[in-house]
Length: 351
Image (cartoon, rainbow, N blue to C red; front, side):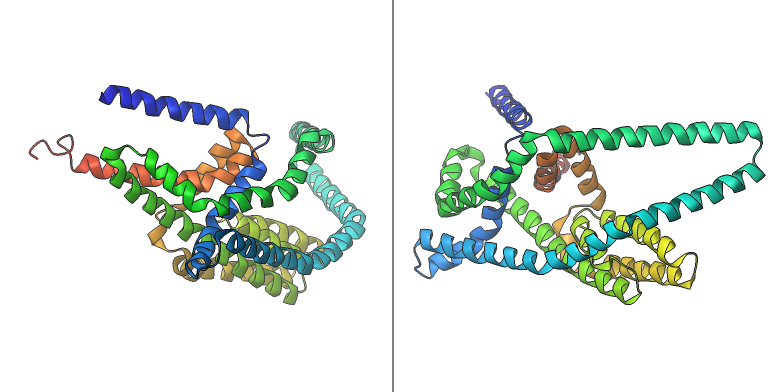
C-alpha cells in the first residue's frame, strides 16, 4: 500500500513537471493571476467578514490594486522616459568616449606587451566580441520575430485581471475543495506544512518588496544628489532586481561605476558613488533585510539564487516567477523530512 502511494505521488509530480514544461509558453497570465489572487485573498476575506458579498469585495480589491499599480506606473514612466531619452541622445558620445579609452588601452598594451602576446590578446578580444555580437543579434531576432512574446504581453494585460478575479471570487471554495482531496490520514500534517509554506512565502515576498522600495528610493535619491545622470533609472533597476539577494545592488554598482567613469572619470566623485553603494550594502545587510525579511522566513539567499537559476533554465520566464514559491515549498518539505529523520531510528537506533 505504501509503495502504491509513493508511485502515485511520484507519477503525479512527474505529470505536473511535464505539463509545466510543455505549457510554459502560455502560462504567464495564469501564473501572474494566481500570484495576484494569492496575495490579495486576505484583503477580500476581511471585506467578506464585514458582510460584503464576495464578488463585490473581489471587484473592489482588484480595482484598488490595478488603480494603484497604474498610478505608480504613470508617475514613474515620465521620469524613466526622460532619462532613457537622454541616455539615447548621449549614446554616440558614450560610444566614442569608450572607443577612445579602448584605443588608449591598446596603445598601452602595444608598449608593454610583446608582439606574440599582443596578437593573442587581439585574437581573444576578437573572439569574445564576435560571440557577444552574435548573442545580441540572436536575442534581438527572437524579440522581434517572436509572435508568442507579443501574445504573452497582450494576454498578460487582458487575461491576467480576468484570471485573478475568478480565482479571488472562488478562493475559499477552491481551498475547501483541495482540502477535501487530502489523504485523511495525513490531512492535519499537510495542513500544518501548508501553513508554514504560506507564512514563509508571504514573509519573504512582503519583506523583499519593502526592501526593494527602500533601496530604489535610497539609490535614486543618493545618486541624483551625487550628480550621476540616469540615477532614477538605476534606482528602479536596483529596486526591482533586489528581489534576488545581492543581484540588484551588484548590477547597480556595475552600471553606476560605468556611467561614473564616463561622466566623472577617475575623480573623487567616483569615490562618492562607491561610498553610496558601500553605505547601501551595509544598511541593507544589517538593517533592512534583517528587520523587513528576517530569519523567520528560513529562505537562505543562496537557495533563492539557485532556485531562480534552476527554474529559469528549465522553464524560462515562467520558471523565474515560480522559483520563489517552489523554493519555499521545497525548503519546508526538506525541513519536515529532516525533522522526521532526526526523530526516527535511522538517526538514533536506541529510540
